[in-house]
Image 1: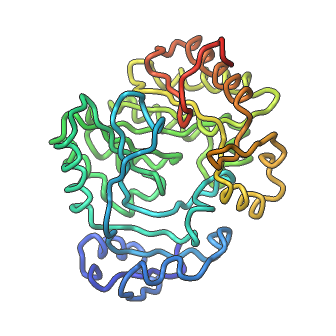
Image 2: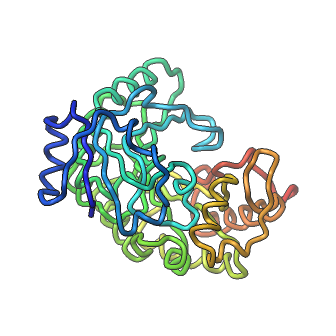
Length: 341
């Protein structure tokens, strides 16, 4: 999997480091003083990850838990994300990571106790009924969880934070680490889903829709609460029919009572990410879309098209039996009604 593993000297003998290295006995290991002195110092093309992927292991310095932007999660509740890893083994054509870091190499941070301290600090200061902590902002929460091994630690942490909710965001079907743990009401596993043909064409190297649905069904039977992200939704002539079919498939494995929420978001890019998409995937179907640059610096569909798409998807969700209170819009400045689509 990795051509080389670079480990900070201070954590070379840490039990978590040893556990990870035990899985890659034949991979060359290099000691380094600090990840920040090496990672991103020289720009590495994003698609080089296909042939030469390196792994860094060390500690994250500074702010480990950050306030999430507006419209990041369920409206009216407090949202934070925490940083335990950089980059992803998958290769979605729209992924913002290709324009965020100067390297596609993976980074595992192992100082989870310090992350927990900052989570607990925010928790103690909050006066909200619910406070969310999201994992997977800069990586996939489950794809390599059998290697990183941090899930039992966070399950134990959130047992003692009853008004907090932990979201594990994923496109993976790697659920064995979860099946080995007991579900908790305040830990929600959320899957990003798209129609099957869209996953095949743009969500490169990710599990198929079929395998993600099987994973959802297994977790539901185990007792987990599940969240769903229809994000990013990409416009095409039959997108409404495709999502209607997707909802029908989802209803077969995910009963409404096990659904925590369903978020809807239309494909969007920063200008830097859009530049990388054009560079990395010049034949991508995404590049034929009618995007516009917004005053906020985003590249996205015109608002009337976005709102029409989202309104249609909302209607499909309600028609499929999903409670209106469980559907929200991701990264849109306001909710909308039929009158302003």
